[in-house]
Length: 172
Image (cartoon, rainbow, N blue to C red; front, side, top):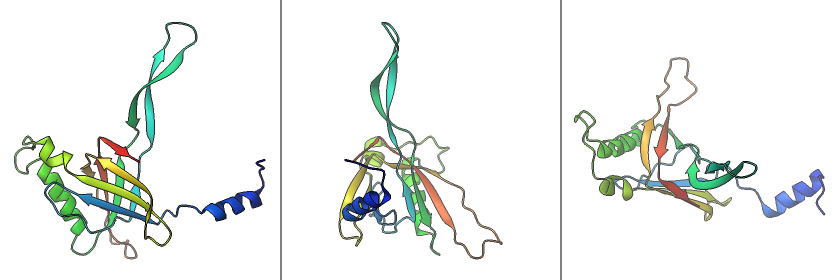
């Protein structure tokens, strides 16, 4: 019988273990690019929801699920190294999607540029040796590089780059 006792909660939690938020691994590969070697500082996985149709014809209104959707983008945050490797990689990936200096109208083949890209997020066990859960993102591509903050008063901080990812779906 379940109780609202904190000791029971602690015992269950300690026995089964909790997923540590700092134990994750992200692998990504752009079109015709090598696997990216630099781990993001953080990753945000979007929620999932079912889009509904409201049936109002007979009796009380009822929602009917009709489509699987995701309610936000995937967000990765990279700590910028002195060579800006993460920014270079993401910029190159974006340039492969829309050719630079072509007024933004030179789309590349979807199959060549998006379908073969990979983004995998793994929640790792405490020693980092195996994945407790894996999220495979299908047809990912970097949609937005957020503005970079730099300032003279930020002398105890470092530059971070956030990237918003578009995708078709993710498989868990």
